[in-house]
Length: 232
Image (cartoon, rainbow, N blue to C red; front, side):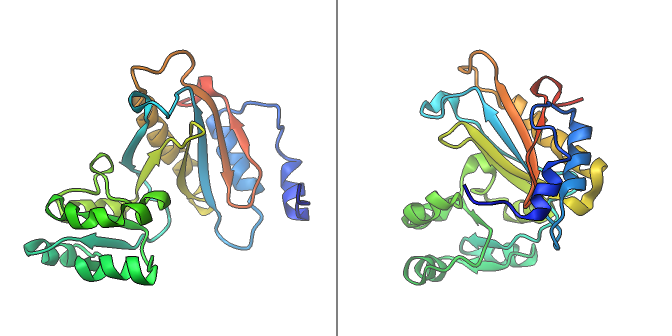
């Protein structure tokens, strides 16, 4: 196991690894234990009582965080016809179709954070499934990234829309802002995300749904949140 740096070790001393904190306490600790020389991202990791191998136990969706993510997201829109102009006017960073599909395939180009596509070009975009899928970048109707409402999708993404999705280990990861947001804004974003994940509980999920909830900054230690008090 790699040796942790002095800053991390000092921060870790502030956190009781056995304690389950209330959300407000946890956000306060995360801001206090962030010691890096940059504005660290704050992320939530949620262990869910689901078996993602089964289609009826998938947990996936997207929400707009009230205070955004603190990060400017680069949007690639794959479309054609009149939707090209709509995407450009809405502030998309890249707009096109065949040229960008080819660029991704042949040049391994990934100068974007989110891909939005209109339904009428998904037969072309489908060629990128093997490339974009593993990176979590493939457009999907459930996350609102396959839509004819291109302008709306771009505006939401730029305003702080994030996607959450349970991985093969039954854990969902999502950013909820930057350390500089402070406790109140982080708490608002956190509650918005947790409400969405609780609402997305599959009917097939039995027993305890929220197994564990951990919040951490990019370089800081994890802080455990009491699953029984996630919205308090």
